[in-house]
Length: 159
Image 1 (cartoon, rainbow, N blue to C red):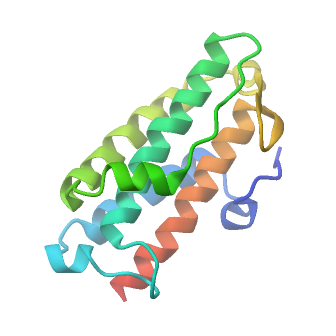
Image 2: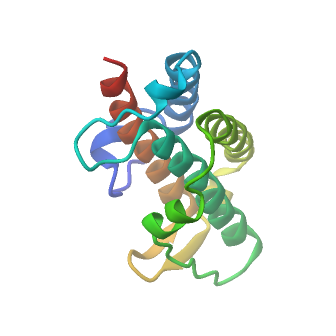
């Protein structure tokens, strides 16, 4: 069942876990051979660099993977919002290779976790102050679309 998330257009009709697998593989193959200078490119003036996008992807894997785990382990769980720019500012010195490795590792961990969930697990509800009543399934679909959204930016930078 397709749910409406901020990244539904990016996900389209793709199956979320398959899309996540393909996108993580594509990030690794796309950026794996980049130089330090290539990681500092941006896709548009004033936008994040490739290094910052990879840092952001790792951060969101940590934050949103945690949300899913908390929802499944904590009845009545209410997720906390976070300011992505403030998070980025806290990790401004993280190297590009470290950011990519962190993203790949946390993404793999989350994908294995999500693949283990039953339909009942995926229907587990939680709330968010900006989005209201959600489910783990909604979160999985949002994460997949979010990853595809940023993959397009990295592909643009690759030329």
